[in-house]
Image 1 (tube, one colour):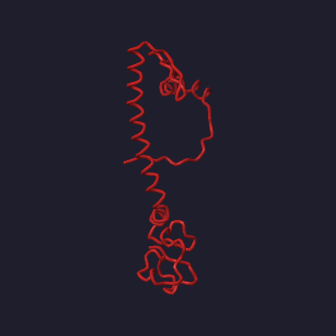
Image 2 (tube, rainbow, N blue to C red):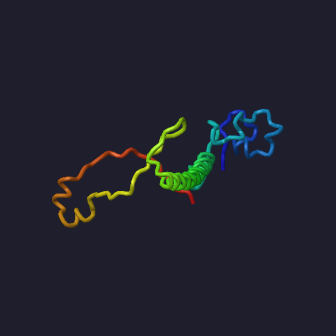
Length: 146
């Protein structure tokens, strides 16, 4: 439920203007009644903090979900286009090219060596501890599309 803190509310601040049946004839409608998430007078109520949070950020959550889905779709398209470009570069023996839009370099298949940290920690825990590097990681939000 969204309550309104607008002092001029004739309904005694029972609910937000966006939920009021009389908003079309009311002279005290909040200017942002169609966007309660952006309204400073909107007060979100729920039985849990999660419900209040979800109500308050519903617009942002929906926008992020749409962006994440679009990004995933674009990444899939990018992968397909790169595969086609790679096949064409291999067909014509092109190692690199540069134009006004992009610079592309063909990278040959290779072998990469790395340290198996799990194996190192298990077999040589003292050495693993001695070589361990600690870094601060900034807080962030991880989002996964369903």
